[in-house]
Image (spheres, rainbow, N blue to C red):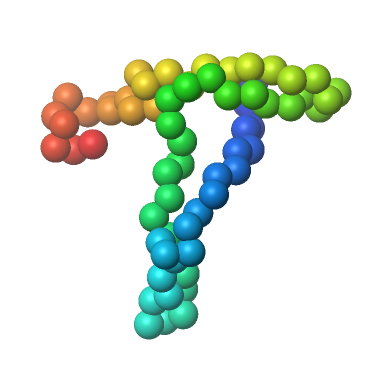
Length: 66
């Protein structure tokens, strides 16, 4: 079963830059470890843990390839 989660985060204006081609770049965290609330389709809340070992998994044996 595939599940999608949508989060939101505050991004400071100072981290937004425009490239010479006109694209916007920003340094922003994708996620962090912790327990987060998610709303189900029926409106009820569900708490879900994002564990460090799941977020920072490296499929290679060498840390230099991650």
